[in-house]
Length: 199
View 1 (cartoon, one colour):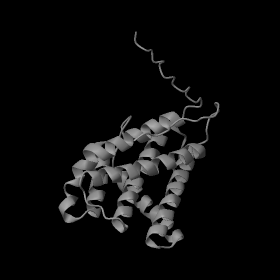
View 2 (tube, one colour):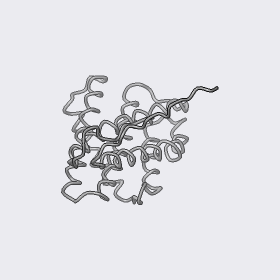
View 3 (cartoon, helix red, strand yellow):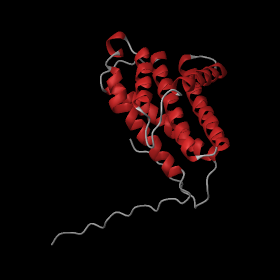
View 4 (cartoon, one colour):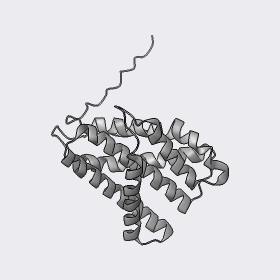
């Protein structure tokens, strides 16, 4: 999955809100991609509530990953702005999709997403985050939560899919995205090497 993680306009330092606005879009794409990959790996995730519950669980994980990275790089006040805005933007997108697909009330969908994110934040607080990635317990807890969503045949097997593949890849993408978004100067576009015709 390709993601754009650099600004296009000339250099000024971006605010925590601007950075989290940009990340919110990427986080939604990463969660969608993890869901698609899990289905391609022959895990049954039915379109409907189960599909949306998988997405929510993965989104909570990614928001909390973003928060841990912000802890390394931002002041306490800026981190609060960053994570609060990220959570709200992701919750809005998720609630719109859930409301549209399941006919649930939009405001209630968003509030439930935020309430459960706050619950997950307390649960993930027991796990560490090293310099560039979470510790094993962080991944293991995501896998456990995803396992609760799956049917009996898949609930045990999906743990390895999450710990070994989906969660580490997702974290790498969030880390890479934030490294790019914190750079004030846009990257120059790469030029393709001119192809030369043979004799």
